[in-house]
Amino acid sequence: MTNDALRLERITTDNFEAAVAVRVRPDQEHAVDPVVKSLAEAYVRARIAWPRLILDGERPVGFLMAFFDISWGDTGTDIRSGLWRLNIDAAEQGKGYGRFAVESVAAELRRREGTDLYVTWHPGPTGPELFYLGLGFRPTGETSGGQTVGVLKLT
Image (cartoon, helix red, strand yellow):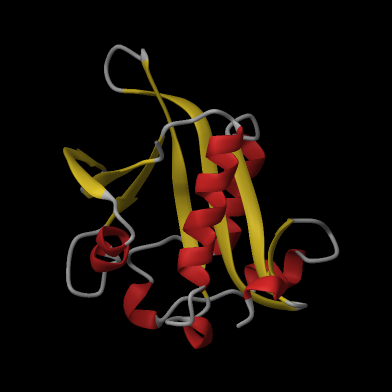
C-alpha cells in the first residue's frame, strides 16, 4: 500500500462488479452487510448515502458508505453524519485501508463543516470495536439495532 495510490471512487457501471466482489472474512459477515445490499440502500436513500469504492492504484481493496445529515432519536432534532458501512476485502485487511477509509470520511465531513463522525459496530471478539477505539472513537452509551454507537470528535 502506498498512500499516494489510495483513493475513493464513486460506484459506476464501470466498477460495479469490482465493488460487489469485495468480501469480508467469513467470521465477519454477521457484522457488516454485503456491498450489494449497501448499494441497494444507497439507491433508495440517495439523499443521505455516500458509497465509495476504495482503490489502491487500480486494485479494489474495500468499500465504504457514509451517511450525511440524518435525523437521530425520538425528536428528530439531533442531526448526525458518519460511517454507515466499511467492508475491507478479506485478503486486504490489516494493511491500513480501513484507517484510510475512516480518515477519508472524516475529511469529507470536515469539508461539509461537520464536527462529529458517528459509527456503529457489533460487539464481540470478531467485531471491529478495537479498530474503531484505536482510531479515537468513543462509545456514546447508545445502541442502534443491538450495535454500539461511537463518535469521533473532528474538532
